[in-house]
Length: 352
Image (cartoon, rainbow, N blue to C red; front, side, top):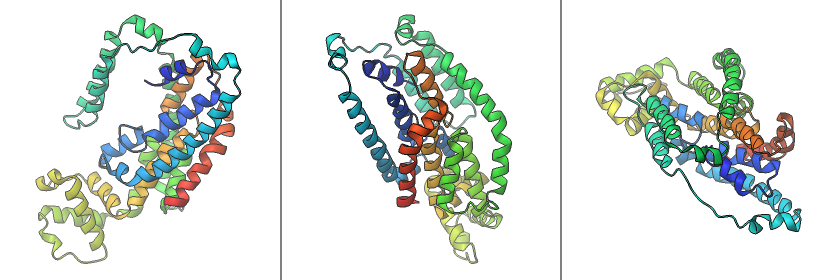
C-alpha cells in the first residue's frame, strides 16, 4: 500500500496492465513469504505458535527460486514492452524535467510502531489498539496536501471491506467442513497440502485458509497420546524423558525438545498451552507440512484479485490512477495460468 502509488507515478509514461499484475504477484504476495509481517497467513501462524523466523529458515531457497523465475518473466515482458514504445514515449519522463521528493517522513514512526506491535502478545488487545492508534495518528498528522498529491481516499478499503465481508460470511462453513474431513479427502502428503491450501487460497482469503489446513494437519498427525506424553514430561520438568518408551516416544521427545528451543519460558513455568504443544509437534515431526501450507497459502494468494486483501486494493488504486487492469478472468487466463502455475509446480517438484 505504501509502494503502489509511487510505483505507478514513476512508471506512468509507460505503465501497462502487466506492471500492476506483477506488482500484485511480487509485492502483495510472494515477496512476503518469509516472515509473519510479510503476509497475513504467516502472521496467524505466528500467533498460533510457529516461531517468527521458522519459515525464513526453511523456505528461503524455494522463495529465491520462485521469485527469481517470476521476476525473470517480468524482466522479459518489461524489456519487450519498452522496446515497443515510440521515441516520444521513451523520452517523456526525461523531457518533463521532474524531480523526486519525499513528504510525510514522520509516518515512518507510525510504520515502526505497527511493526513493534506485532511482537506484543500480552496483555490482550494491546497489539490491535496500537495498530489502530498508529493508523489514526498517521492520518491525522499528515498534511492534506500530501494526501491530495497521492490521490489518497478510502474508496479502495471500502471496496475490499464489502467484498471480503461477503467472502468471510460464506467461506467459514466450507472451511470448517474441510478441516474436519481433510483426512477422508486423502490430503495427507506435504505436496497435497501445498496444492490444497494453495487452490483455496487462490479464490478465498488465504489467511483463514492457512489456519484451517494447519488445523487439518494437526488433526492428521497429532493425537491425544502425544499431547498427554509431552504434558507429563513438562510436569516432571524433563525427568520422565529417561523412561520414555512406546510407539510415540520419538515424537514426544522431539516435540518436547522443540518446545524447549522455542518456548523455554513456558516450559520452565510448566504452563504450555495445548495449542502450542500441537503446533510444536507438527514443527518437530512433520515440518514439511507446515512449510507446504505456508508456501501454498502465500504463493497461491497471488492467483486472483480475491486471493489476498491487498490484491484488490492495488487493482482499485491503479484503476483510480487511470491504469487499465485485466478483468478477473483475464488476470487468471493471461497471467496466473501461464506464469504462476508453472513456477508453483517447479517449487512442488523441487522441494515438496
